[in-house]
Image (cartoon, rainbow, N blue to C red):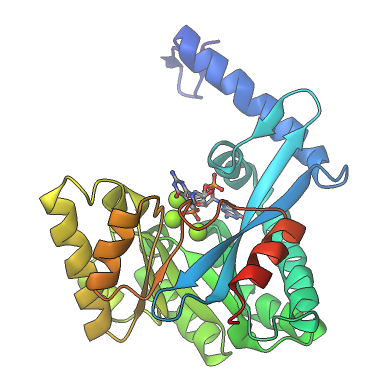
Length: 280
Ligand code: C2E
Ligand code: MG
Ligand code: MG
Ligand code: MG
């Protein structure tokens, strides 16, 4: 399809681009019905506190099983939901569903557990976000510090000033924020120091080759030291091997998350995992 962009110029699509845009439209349409048809659900992945081996928090990760298209990755459908605006409704559903689960875990043996929820930059830029988050926490009668909102560096790209304001507002309400995929975005260190960030999550691309790549070791060690100096905690993402874990431990990383400990799991399976990790 050649698309007229309004000024008598054509943009030509290659066959691959055409296939991609057809797929994106299919996904967007299917997503419109996914929530009401109960096709969306959450998996949970534990974050392991390295000093004690305990699980202080779990991250909620969105999953979608479509009857015809099968399992669709959030890396595919989240950007589409962001473009179409559906992310606002989906994001609020994720928040409510994750906190419903947390409430259940608090009442059933894990009173101190914290829930990490990924937030799209589109959600973050809604002026009413801090108010919405507070309202949901109040409805669930949950203390605000049991919620960690995972943001990416993209939240500050367009308007660093309002990003700081929103973070200040969430912080003053007692909600914690993590910087997800840290090191892959464009945030500057001068911005970072003004952000009310509780945790830096070291992107898995730096963790993956810790065994072989001296540069990645230098980067990870520098991120941990910088976070310590700024009073932020660190969580390493994508930890898959004992060697990666040993390096992270030695460098003083606070938490690790990855297949070495557990894949993201359905709530009942995660609960079994948590019971095994209870201090004996
Ligand atoms: P993320 O928040 O950085 O999540 C980490 C991703 O790494 C997850 O992929 C997780 O399943 C995967 N992972 C965890 N441990 C390992 C490991 O040891 N090795 C490897 N190779 N991967 C590991 P997933 O679940 O496919 O999610 C991808 C991204 O989609 C997330 O990255 C997040 O940016 C986004 N996402 C997921 N759920 C939501 C949501 O509810 N809302 C929003 N806005 N974004 C979400
Ligand atoms: Mg995340
Ligand atoms: Mg990440
Ligand atoms: Mg990611």
